[in-house]
Image (tube, rainbow, N blue to C red; front, side):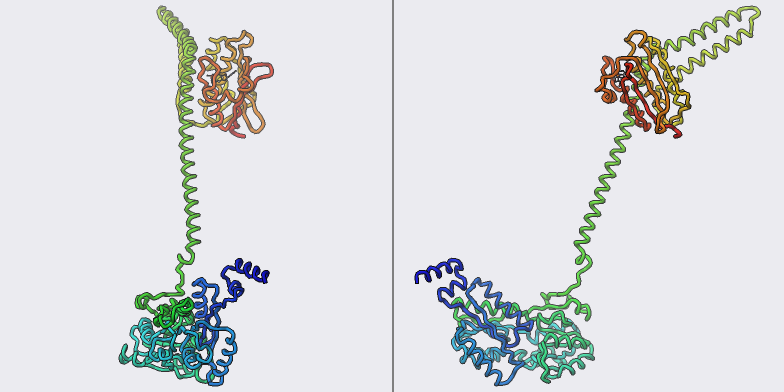
Length: 615
Ligand code: ADP
């Protein structure tokens, strides 16, 4: 006994208010019986049932069980079947009390009116899916309420006029038209709405004939279909497949009445929404389960009919959407290219945009780099010019000395000529010789000046084929006076080969000159025998021309052999530290390489490798 109680308690704790707990407590579950007039498995009625279930779930009660029964009386007419149904239900529910019945459809309402007393005498009823007509209200039992749902004849006619604006004729298809409890007095309604409207009533015709008749309808007509279950010949259809058969041959648009018929060649219309019908009835049932008296809930019209149209059918029948009833929904609209592919388009466009941006950034970077390179080259050329002027300034004394020689010789020769001319019989042959000497000396002086000019000029880079031996020789000659003043011997050891390189003569000579001047600096203070700078030319593997400038100085600190080429690196008191960096820039601009090393015998050697003009 005690263990039994404990078990019940644990189950209650675990399951809280769940069904198990209720069962364990011995408390009965609340129950709803859904009584449908037709077959649960048809799309329309199964959606109604789903709506009722959703309403029960939404109310948050897990203690409600829903039973469902399909009466299916239209397909199985006759008192014998009805009697057996009553017997079956009585037996089936003998031990299962029903708290509320949700009756779906007019046929169910009629059945309950006749037979409820015998099966569920005490259960209250919520009527759903019934039209608000005096005839249907007359079916309601005491202690009941209702949520009405109805597509009226006015709904059908309005939809038909929206689809066929110059409508003169309607064709009625489907057996529900014959049921006064569904469409009521449609004849009077049509006449009142559209006097003179022609009505072709095929509700009695067998499906075969209907298909034939609807194939050749005149223009300005529309087909109004209600559900078709039977064509009176003992053949039963599902309403949706019957509609599809009619639509197959119809030459005019078809107005339909249920959401579940949409997409089966009907144009649309005011449509019953079965899921909403179920939900509305279910909500009222839950209120009754929660204690409200059915008589206190006044029967009301649900919001369960909506104007909905099939976009493809509207196109087929050239229907202007503006003519549709206000608030209409259009389904099956074919998405536009943008609607269908907007993700693809957006992604592709983003990639293209991103790419364009990256290309723009790269182009801008290239442009900036180009500008920077031009600026750097310009600055290098300015710096090189400064470097040359400084060199010339440094060499001015020796230049003056060099110029002095031809000028002094010219002076002496001119004086000698004057003296000869003072002679009564001057030796003209000697005069001619003297003049020739004067001319030669003048040429020498002019050469010195033009060399200086060439060295100082700031030309944009021009590339010519150059004789490397001659070029090195010229540089060393140019520096000869400078060397002489420092008492340094300048030696050239040209290669016997004819070495040609391509480049800017002034720039390349400046690079070699800077190396040679550094060589002079490096040995100027040393004892006599070491005061020597040697310039060599030669060839190397890989189609390279070589120039080396070697001295017998103290050499370069091993760890500085690369640093010395950096701008403003100097170890000299008066040094600027730009000579080697300019030489480095010039050589690299010519596609060559410059490097320094210490000779094993002492002193520094600078090497320049340049590509041969003709490999
Ligand atoms: P600067 O001659 O004005 O110092 P450079 O760029 O021509 O500028 O030379 C940079 C430095 O490289 C020098 O200060 C010196 O330390 C080193 N250097 C250049 N040439 C030689 C050389 N022949 N022997 C030893 N050191 C040298």
